[in-house]
Amino acid sequence: MVKIYKVTLKALSPLIISKRMGFKGFSYEVEKYIIHGSIVRGALLTKMLEEGEDPITVNRLALSPDYAITPFLATLNEKKSLYINSNIAHSLCFRTKKKIKGVSPVFSLDIENIVSKIRNKTPLEDILAEVFEKHSLKLAETKKTWLMPGETKTCSGSVIVEENRLWFIPSISSNVSIEVGLDHTRGSSAPGMLYAYEHVCEGTVYTGYITVSDNSPLNTILSKRELILSIGRGTTRGFGKVLATAEEIGFNKIKSNISKNLHKLEEPYIALEAVSPVFKLDPLPLPLREKDTVTISSEWLNKLGLPQDYEAEFEIIGILGGYYRYQGWSMRNKAPKLPVKGLSPGSLILAKIKSMKGNPLETLSLLPLIGLDNFASLGFNLVFPLQKDFIQIKPWEVKL
Image (cartoon, rainbow, N blue to C red):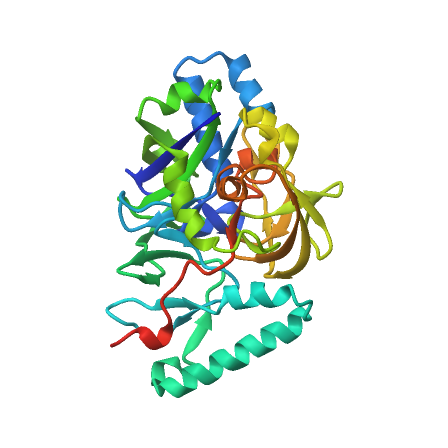
């Protein structure tokens, strides 16, 4: 079988994970809410080399992975856990502009209603139109000004956390460093080289999971429970130091929380929320499309040491969401990484279950942890199964 580690990352020094680049490659804007799985993967493999692991073993882990890594989401404290009280807002989520108890709460339209109507072969456009109309009328009946049209906005792809049944986008502190380039010949500042970059402040906490085969060498480093990793840019200048805390947890604990969103397993229809960019090779990485068939790779199951009983096949009926382009720089090859274009995090893949082996609950509950194929080792192709929404509280139930 596999081992599942809940890993918490706590920033010990400012973090610079570039989101948007500025003049001459300076980090104009940083990613405050998500640390992509591929970044954590690189930090772990580098740590193994620093601690004397055989480079051949590390190369084998990089080229033939037997582990899956989720994205790491910003959260309020170390007690929060991904998929339990921390998640990504999907395409049907919206937030209020007005703050309630200091936060802008996030609500959702009725996923359960949409999934149930799909089996009647009603066109997706008609289903969405009906759901939006009923929802708008319900909000108008509340006569609450902060729920009126123009007072809410979509928040698909945003990191959200739960506190006392209320979901909201956490507040993550960042700062700006201003520096100047030096002209060593003149012994003074270089003309036109005043620049600034944003960074996430110390103390910020991120949470995610790493699923590893029993026999993987990666267990050696994760079993140490605490280690210091270097993440992002500026690590040679004191930036990017994080304390990683790994705790092995049982699969049943996660399964019990995911199963709350799966209440009609006899139904063949389901929504899969993209937790990370989701793509297919065709032959380049491209987003999934309607009528595509998605399978859990049997080869990937073997790599992780899982039985073939967890095989599943889905046919895509519709997609609600947008596209995301991920690119970066490979320290291994000293060259740009192949750009990956996929469905953006938060996108909803409406699908029909064509076939499934073994226990459906266990198979579906593994998807957010092991993904659809070996690209989950890079933090891609992870999906969260939904038959009903994980955001259960309704706007009209909230009192100011």
